[in-house]
Image (tube, rainbow, N blue to C red; front, side, top):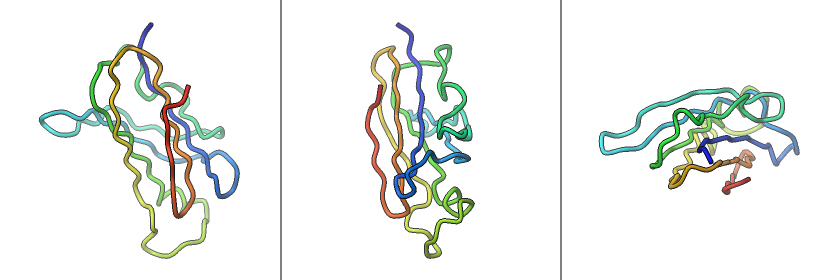
Length: 117
């Protein structure tokens, strides 16, 4: 089995996918963060392909950075300035070559994540 990483974002406050959100992927190591990819979610709140494809998979520590504040502003979501949530980092490890799916469930004042399938 080959390893790869996918993500999607759901707006739980409005009950719909979070289309148009920028998501960045970083590999974490002794020298700091290395940016591997940046994508924008599509109409289903997903990236159009794996944010880390099979060819680039390596076990290690990673960070997905979701640009929630900019997305909420663009979506016209009410909120104060500065927003309670701006950039949401999710740090996680990938130990074996498998499909890792890390979704984000977001609202203006909270979020959750899990390892999906």
